[in-house]
Structures are given as C-alpha cells and as structure tokens.
Length: 308
Image (tube, rainbow, N blue to C red; front, side):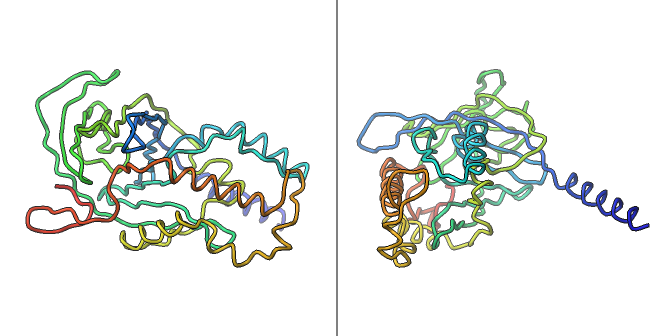
C-alpha cells in the first residue's frame, strides 16, 4: 500500500510539473540604434519578443540566451571542478539589460531592470498603462515575407512609423509598442535613432524567460520591487553612479585581498573589473529610447512618458 501511495504521489508531482511548463512564440527583431547623441555610428543587436501561453509577453536582449549552450558547458565544468573561471573574454555582454512585460488583454506594461542589493541581484521595476494612439494609414508594402500596413504614433518624445501585419494575429511588438491589429514587423523613429525589423520566429515548447546563466547563478532576482517611475529612475541612476554602494561597506581589507581559486587576482581586483564593466555599459549609451523621467505635455495636461 505504501509503495502504491508513493507511486501515486510521484505521478501527481510529474503531472504538476508538466502542467507548469510554458510555451511561447518567439519573435526575433534586429534592433539598429544610435547609442551616442554626438556620433553617427550605429550599433545592432538581436532582441526577442516572447509571447507566451500565460497571457503575457516578454521583450529582452537575446545576447545572453543565445550563448546558453556554450555557457552550460562552461558552468557545468566549473561546478564539477569546484574552480571558478573568468568567462568575461568568451562571453558577450548584452547591450540592453531591462526586460519589458506586457500582460494580456489589458497590455499593461511592467518595466524591470536589475541592481545589486548587498551581494545579491535585485529586480526593480515600474508599471505603466500606456495607451498608444495610432494613426493607421492606407499605405501597404511587403516587409520581409509579411504583408504590412503603415501606422504612426508619438511617444517618449519621438515620432514613430510602424508597419504591422494582420497575417500574425498578435497585437504586440518590440519594446513597449502594441495595440495595432497585427504584429508590428518594423518600427522606427523619424530620426532613425531606433529601428526594429522582424527577422524570424519559432515556437518554444519548454519556455523560460531566463538564460541558463541566470538560472544557474540564481541571478533572476526574485520578486520585483515595484516603484513609481520617478523613484525607479532615481534608484537606477544612483546604482549607475556607484554599482557597489551597498557592497563596499561590507567588504573588509582582508576580504578584498583574498584570492579566488582558479582566477587571477583578488576579490578586490574582481570588484574593480566588474565596476569598470558596469561603467562601460552605462557610458556606452547616452541616447535612450525614451528621455529620463520628464514631463511631456499632452494637450493642456502634463503626463509622464505618455503617448500623444
């Protein structure tokens, strides 16, 4: 009887885990953007929009996830040997750190980014009910393999032109864009500082929004600390100025001087290297998609970051 009961419990666990699996339609967008205001140089990165069967979509940089198979081999080797390895030279860094969630059917947005809080990553974010006012035009053209129609809007201090395809039955798009009768397959601002073009898509049957590295090192950050947008931008701005502000007071000189098995240098050296990586990342872009927290006038009413 006990054996039968154990088998029954095991079957329940297996069934429950199977039920929790998430599937997603992943859309790959090539983002071409101008990171520096005073330079004509353009940069490119592949980003992804994952539309899941859990009534939400997640938009993020694809760089880290694209390296999953390589990183899995490296991390499993470190786990087996018990030795750390500096992967900074073999691992490409993302150009975008934030994730943007849209929740169906309201399409309310949650913008999430990471900061360090003590020795652990922490997720901070803000919620936004962004109702874009689209002007759908009669212009039509082929974008890649899709029949697309033109639409325009204004948001974040920029004028945007989008091409959407009713062939793809999702009223979504990259970044915060949504609300057209079909998936956005191309969108760019009038200055061409930011331009997304759909490159392809695939179905994922065992979906996770996090990369292997994030799951392995528990870098998911846990629950999101939801702030007002003003408080979010102030908190993130402080983090950019001093990424190790919460860690530094905890570190003694003795701790900083300790060496790390399998790696060159001390913990202090590693912190300096990581701090430089943070600063390089933040200094690489002074031309954000949206301006920092500022009031954009909508008619006679002042709103923050809202569509015109």
